[in-house]
Image (cartoon, rainbow, N blue to C red; front, side, top):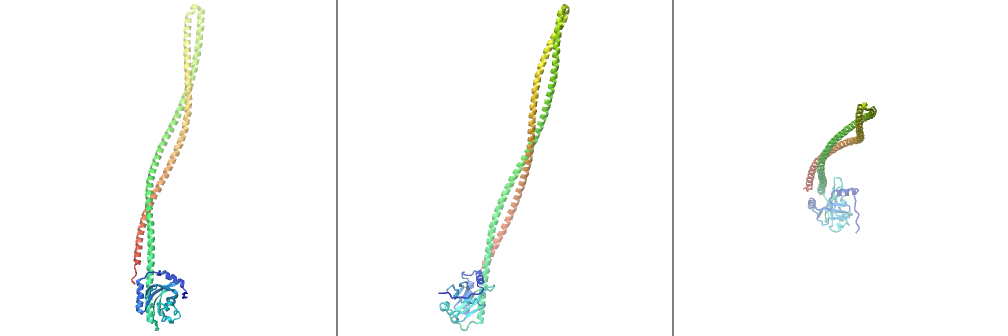
Length: 419
């Protein structure tokens, strides 16, 4: 069967959006609306009364009495015509009305003959449906002004309850959103608190370790200072040894000079002794030529010769000893020279040790400063972590209060209005 064309208001798209905003279509029955249709049925003494909502292709009944169907096509809906009106639409006899004479709801069940519908007008001015009444018996006498007023009052009552229901749903959704946000915020705050505690623990541990490291470096700096002092003392000792060695070398050199002088003197004594021996020999020869008269002279000359021989032997011995001393002095000078070379090498090493010690001292001091800065930074981290921990606890408390408030809002707006 072909679908009959149905009238469409000029603001249809906006009207359908307004209807959707009420979130009423295809919902369960509610007593507040059922009571109104029962009242209308009784008040106007009709077979059927409905709260009809006009969707894009259908009319759907939020409440109904005297009718089994929960919806019909929009092409058969009397209410689709009623929403075009700004007041109650009355059809005294549908069979005599060209708009509805061949309507399936007229020619078939529920055999509508009389119809009256008051539009459900939202505060924004859109007619989203009707409160309607209909009956299989026509009413040629029409519908009185008072009856129209009463039907309008009942329609207004339905609209007020639709508005209250929409507000309740919107508040419920708002409360759900608040609660969802509060739960997410609560989770985030809990995580923040946990992270803050972990950060605080790590910072405390780092602070302890940094303190220990700082103490160790401080001790290292002190030990380095002691080592530097010792090295400086060693350097001074080496300088003293160098001075003593130089003095020893000069002394030994002077001794060599004296020994050379002694050798020279000994040479002169040896020469004199040789001359004395020659004189004694000549005296012996002359004494032999002189005979008895020269005997005493010969004795003297012989003694002189013997003394000269002894002097020569002593002188030779002195010379031999002097040569040995000279050799010893030469070796001592050589050793002093080698010692001086070694001392110079020690002095160079001492200079390097001093430079290294100075560099180590500067490095240790720099490291000490850096670790001191690190300790300070770690302590700042610890302090900030404790602040974050306190702030996270405060945020968590606020979130708990917010969640309780959201729960209270939900409980408040989930309650079904009595009116």
